Length: 459
Image (cartoon, rainbow, N blue to C red; front, side):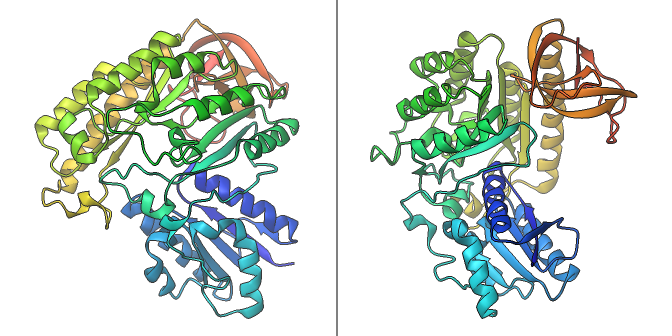
């Protein structure tokens, strides 16, 4: 029995895909071991969303070969897809598998082990992903998560934001058949998983390819009927307690879509609307297809439809041409919207994208300072959102047992994704409980680190 060590970099889509690969490896008789142990085979599911992601991908591949020079080191995924020639030339890498062959990764590995020597064993391992037009079906039968399962419903993106390399790494929009999604969710729910998170590269585009739509016209809302129908079907899965959405395109939020979401009984009022900038000029250079004002209208619509929903977002600082004035406009806009959480990223220059060719690049020192300012703002807004729930009745889905401030507790999340702890010795993992949120925990978690203001007591 050969041992395999798996390591994932990047998004939840990558994580889902590696879970399926790991599942298949076990079924084939391979033994899965921790990545920091000596193994016969190392498989790294790579990421390329930033330059740092590329570097981390290379580092993990090299660490694996250093840990066991005789091991087979397999590079999979996005970094492979965009940097194929560089990866093929890397002496630390024995086998490369692009995004279009992940479902066949185990068979490709087995073929390589038989032939030993051809980095692209299995044929079209790094084919042009842009020519793929059929969703690559992968089925997850179980997951290492405690109570939550991430469900991939589509792949690819047709947006081509001027800074983003992902359409080149993932290809065009390809949606998964509804019946395949439902079969997977029913299987996981029957095993006790209470919450699912719908994920993909651009889930707002779910089903557009079924209807022959490459992209909605600029200024037009995204068709939402396919996604809404899927949500209604998932809402009928009896064992399921919660449905959570991944990142949404702001243009999909319309009165009709919001009303449809309100009718999904199990939907969590937690919406991630990717913003990237609060300045119209910067948004135009990013090729984002909406204005800051239009984005705000979408947020206000969700807040009118749901009572105090959790609104989260992504922001890029230091995009080419971003002046001090444009940054201040973004900061003012973020203050106005008042998010629950903001993920702040310094702009990362990616070859092949229009933004990378611009001459008005912003210095790293300016990006660092702007990131610091927005991260401080994000911390204040996040704390304020949680404070707004003090004294309110909530429902918590428990995931794990932790010692908090010297007391045995069950820890989980509310529907709004507020982390909460209940003092009890009873194992409540996978169960829900209603209660009133009290103040923030100010002690230490047994696993190390301060609980500070990111976890609250449930009474």
